[in-house]
Length: 205
Length: 205
DNA sequence: ATATTGACATACCTTTTAGTATGTTTTAAT
DNA sequence: ATTAAAACATACTAAAAGGTATGTCAATAT
Image 1 (cartoon, rainbow over the protein chains, first blue to last red):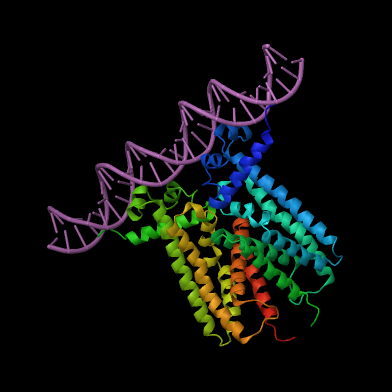
Image 2 (cartoon, each protein chain N blue to C red):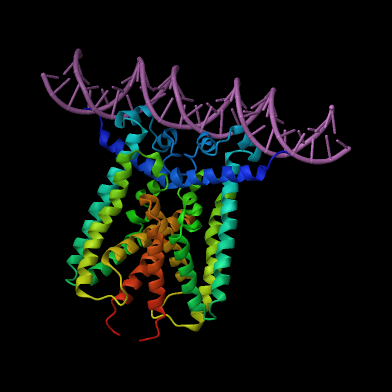
């Protein structure tokens, strides 16, 4: 067999994702991304059926990565403390750290990028994009629910609402980041949400 | 002079903005929006130089609308109370109300939509889009700063950070709204931010 | 050594899409 | 009534973008 095809496929996916972050999926032309990847159409159509297939592969890969990342964050937090509330705070801290150190989460959010041109994708791709948020709700929401079984919040909020708020805090940071280029804003937004959680469950009253 | 040209120009802008919300600007083809507006290319190119000009007109109009709306919210809040902190909380309440009643803010945010395909626009359009966030910072941020001169927050946060957090809460709601179609999430996100402000400045300690 | 197959490159085709050229209608002023 | 000009509609053009057809090269199995 010839040289490693999986590597070039990743190369295509990477340059494509970069461009999607910059100009959206529709404006990401094949010529543009193949020029950036220093490849040609022959390479592209060898690895993908068409552009829709690229959209699918992109979101699949991103969803897998996010799932692995989220699960690992929860696991790491669980090894640091038994208190679920502290675990939640630590998880937020991990995400903030990832962003501040230029990790994966500081590059953007493909779910968000897709969300702003949803009508361009077929239902298959759309449901995968939505699944990204669902995954977040499951993983983070589960832990938040545990925390709320132990501690009473000072204001009447549900664990589902809180989880959704955290997701919104993250995605809101992404929007401002996309507009102004500095990922620090994502960390700041999550930092505020962490403050909110701390105040909500503060025992010293 | 013939019939009202300004009305049809608005019609074009409206159907264009709808489509931008649904599929982004790049994927918003002229044929598609003109079909929705029940007009033809003759109409379009009579009112706009080209598609870039449409992008410019859209963001100009949206920026003006937002400015007027924000200013009016602040004014209305100022007539209800003299306490700047309460004014901030009331402003947030107004925005929540606007969303819940299907107001302008429940339709989406053109700044956010543009943010996810920024590279497609020229610098002129980009700076106008950024100006939307700047305007928010000025109008809301000014009021938040007043509030923080009177009350000390329980945690060390700056008025600028708080304003940015509120913007992020709103835009984060927009992202989830775009993904799942229910604008209530925007209100929920802002509601959480309002909780955060209340807890931050709560005197009963 | 040769054949075979995956992994690409190159050149071309086709459709879409922005943009143009030109014609027609409508309104209002004279 | 005629004219002038804005406000469109229709038909066409050019270029961009997605996609195809075909060829070449490299590695491996026989």
